Length: 464
Ligand code: FES
Image 1: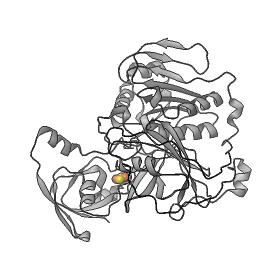
Image 2: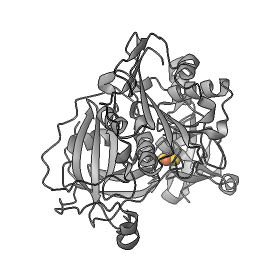
Image 3: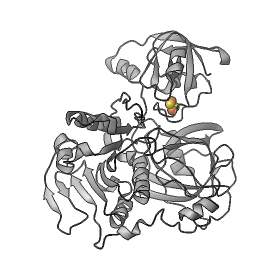
């Protein structure tokens, strides 16, 4: 994910356009590439789970008429052989506690990623190339997090541990944690999980983190949630949590996808529409020549036509009260930049604009050199603590250069939002596109985020 506002400082992180558009996973830190093979069908579960109760007594707001999703159609807008080493665990989960009094007296222990592995209890195919993985803690602990945050998984592939951050798509304070992951071309970990992770398998995790969340980001009771592609993942967690907890919330949800078959959580959104009068969804589908708006509250959908990318016209038409809302936005960087521009052109108060993209901070400089045929210049990279002294191409991503030469840096989100790749430049300088998790004092001391920094000249680096 790459730019997220903090409550105190809604500074937008510089965004980079990638070529994959809406098809790019917005929530995994993998590098983009074409979708490969189809996801495997879910395997049979060996665990028996009780059905969780809803978070709050919100069902009293259920609508009487069958819900329909709002559709806005328009042109707007290797399998590795290794298996996890950890043995499968068998256990059953108790019912989720939902009553406030129960929570006070019987609140289960919170999950601790440092001591307790996650165990896969459910796989669900969302679209042809995206899948939800539902985990439980091996000790049946409860998952506490802020809606919109991500968890960093440690995945062992061919005897090497890879760290990747994935947005959480479930609601907090439950005994299950759902991650929704999209295949991405050359996405080592995402694709490995889709191809290999089975019910009962366990994974380690580093932490849950993320500044893009509806707890820390102060928001109004009227919200506009905007997502594209797999960027719907954290936004869905925000929507479901607010709907369950805040009866005064007025939530508009605009989701953009290539076409209806690529809409993640389609059925889930329909269910939410049935349960909550204060929730409305519009789908903006790229591969269509028309604009169709289906209101959840009428059996007579109104149709109009619109073409082009997501635009001021579309936003103004759908949300005339835009300036009364807080915007939470997640998706590919190009899409997000377009929405950001629209908001700015609409004199939207950007203090109420929060965004995050997990699109990798790609090595644009190097790519530009390759594209233009420019001659690559070599510079020296020194990492004294690990006896590394190597030539790297000027413009290389520092994270890539460190990993290539065996420096054990952790690049979990690979997009400048998790802070796991923090390192210190002791000599020379880099060009950074994100300092999001760094304090002013750390920046002053020379700390950088390796995933968001390119090597500009001879460089010496320390991991701490
Ligand atoms: S890998 Fe997350 S900030 Fe760099």
